[in-house]
Image (cartoon, rainbow, N blue to C red):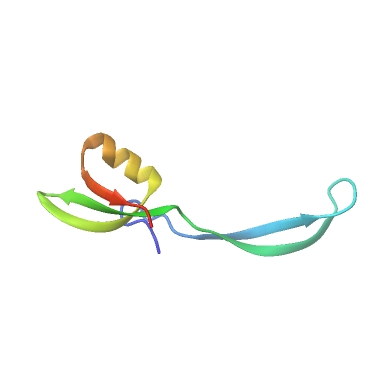
Length: 73
């Protein structure tokens, strides 16, 4: 899933497991970081459209008045 406004999508990275003193790395584990998506009803050219929007875009759209309703799942 991705944000339908800005295109933000999940990112894969490494989670480091440290051991001992200092910066010794025991192992690396793959970690998927997902965007915080909410289902929102947007007003696009006087029509209502439902879309999955990240919270950063939702905040911007609320300020401009383009969001009618939204529900967190």
